[in-house]
Amino acid sequence: MKLRIKKYLSGKSSEKEQRELLDWIREDQNFDEFQAIKSEWKKEIRNEEVAAEFQPNWNNVQNILFGRMQSDLKRTQRTLNLFRYAAILVLLISVPSLIYFFTQSKTPEQQLVYTTVAADFGQISKVVLPDSSVIWINSGSTIRYNNQFSTTNRDIELIGEAFFKTQKNAALPMIVSSSDLQVKVLGTEFSVMAYPEEDFIQVVLEKGKIELTSATHSSFNQEMKPGELANFNKDKRELTLSNVNTVLYTSWKDGLINIYNLPLSELVIKLEKRYNQKFVVDDKIKNLPLTFTIKNENLSSILSLIEKITPIDAIQHDNVIELKYHKKPMN
Image 1 (cartoon, rainbow, N blue to C red):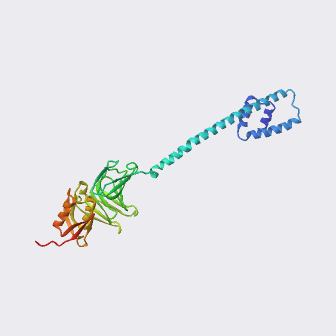
Image 2: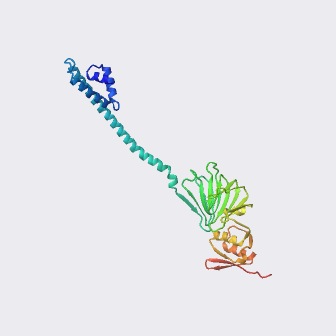
Image 3: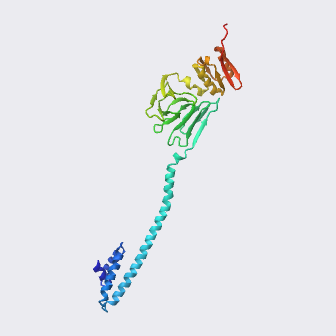
């Protein structure tokens, strides 16, 4: 390459050789090498006078060479500047886009908005969910679900009692959570009673199939069949299954309370929620079993019936009704 450069500086290169040399000079680091060889060549010709016949050609070549180099370098610099500005523009566009992408991808987790539906004491509420599932919410109970329901999840949080008639979706099962107990559902009809003040959670399955799991114990798993009642003790974490007449446990959604051999202590819980009335029960009669059906009767009629068929007196004290043992006289 040194010989070709000296030949070029001497004005003896062809146009093709000149173009090839200019292409070579434009490559990285080559310009510095060219300058070094040029300085060496100048030292050599100082001791050798350039022949007069080559002097015009040499000057002409020098002018052309450096003119082209300056032009090419300016054009290269403009191209580099263009790429630099384009890169900055792409960066300015890309960074906000990437920030938006990553923040939006996390939005469903970070910005969940919850809808809560409650039934006041003495009332039963009915709600249709975004996936067309229907829930009946018993007196004094609430359900809660988020704005991603039926999109990325079908999660329901329950406090109290509710009856579920769910739409089937194998890819996105419904999960009903009450305390530590979870009910996994594909498509079925069932009732869950999980009041915070109670020691147990009851799940009754009318149709389909459900699976009971735990949020904190992965080994806990129990499938249920139609007609079964699952009774889960929250303190002991014990689960018992039994076959029952499900109507006795789910008819409340239709305004009926079927009482069948139910201890008085459990009956008053239902009455408190249905009629928003506080009761106090004498210890002597807490386990007294009762059987009857409540439809549209008012509380006074129900208490009158209880007084007629049991040794119980119902006494009003301000906002509390006391149920006391009273031995009925023999007729």
